[in-house]
Image (cartoon, rainbow, N blue to C red; front, side, top):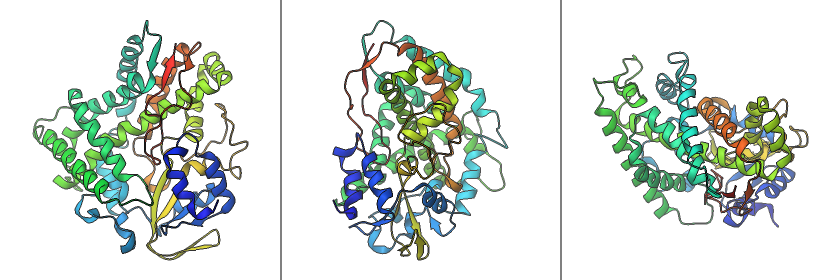
Length: 400
């Protein structure tokens, strides 16, 4: 097949269970221009260079006019899609109640709470012969954690779950379709979730409650405070990204371990390997597969000229399996050394919530592994979510 259709094939739902042969085709072809005008990059060192190149923008408003989506300028853009110095300012304000240097103990302090939530979910599985890892475990764990962290009522989960799914669909890369309705729905979901979260935060102004929404509206940092629009965009990002990617990480982890029973047995015997195993899962079956960037000037990538303003699609999951960087990359190795993967992206936009996601995955899988000894997949491959960007099973039924 023609390499200029690779993005269409990667995003085709039929290839969601196994896009890796297409990624190998991309690495073999090099940087490839697609029929929609975008450029695909799939080799490790090219992706690394681009993630650290100041000429590459994360802001979609820098796309050339013919590539911009409707409603783009009308929505508030979160710091994950901004460039410095605005990215640095907003990320710094968001980090103040979450991590170093101002709140260095936040994530470690949550370990006990995460373990308790995990144990509650595990106990609820007792006596059952079939469970859906997604619905019964991998989804409720990070949702409960992020709700407690932000200060969002857990009972409102059905409402923001629908918003989250619409926002993810809005952000997904889907060449060859009319995006108007999808983007209209996404912009509406962003606005509604933003209003909801800002209203919650405003209820705590002057009455901080120890959660992050309280911290945002009561912060006295001279670089702040966040405007209402900035607060909405930041809170939406943290709520959506704070659970969606971790669901995929845990679910992909269980699926991978059940497909590799020898490594599952090894982890049962050697639980000390679990932190390295989580890093290998982030390389081998990452929760995020694609990221879009935009050149601020005409650039050369591996001998290919990419014009200013063209969509540049970094296929992170392809770089994670590049034999030019990783030894025997198609093999799942829980003890893999020198594992500098793209599971959390890279450069200045490296994942804000990576420390929390690592803790959640280690605790979750550590609790599940002893119970998976006789487990079998009820369906392989399982049904996948629609998104090619945030790739993971929609359901993962297993028999115990």
